[in-house]
Length: 282
Image 1 (spheres, one colour):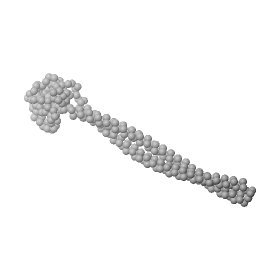
Image 2 (cartoon, helix red, strand yellow):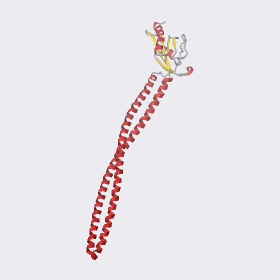
Image 3 (cartoon, helix red, strand yellow):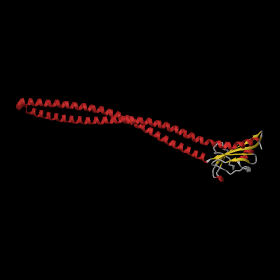
Image 4 (spheres, helix red, strand yellow):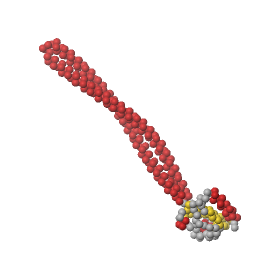
């Protein structure tokens, strides 16, 4: 037997232990299996001295003098797996091969999980992006509401000034009506017509005064409401800005997670890139 094959057979148990029994290991010459150690989760039932199948990947690697990595469906073994065979050379002559195989179902689960993770993170990213857009709109609306409240407050202040002016005019008119009544009384019979006018002036002054009070009360209530609206709008704007900032951080995190998920999906495909696309029995 070839020295290289003997050495590899001696090393096989140690290699299996180092790989924690996760991989099938086998050594062959050009016609048969010389040594075989099953994996913890996969045993294809090969025994030492079993002949190589001419249709198998191991035989094809030896004949073709090339490495072959093939995906083998479950068939009789119940578990799909990937088998890799490397021909062993002694000078220019192929003297045997070193073959490995490991179960494929975990890799497929990894691919499915990584794709699902990437899809889920895409949806999360889109949802958070939409929330950021909504909070920005909310912030803009809060700013607009604050501006409207400020302008309305200015208008209310002007109305309050007008009410004060009306009250002042009413007070002056009432005083004028009182003076007119006094002068009418001094004029006696000749002042009766003027007395009627004075009375109407006093009534008008009283009505204006009451109207001014009503306007003032209304303006005071309006100013209070506007103040509450402005305060709430400011609070809303603050909350919206804080929420927007938090969501933007979430967006960045979601994008990072999506990048990681996509990278995981790419890595899960790496082991498939070396497959020959050929179908072998091992």
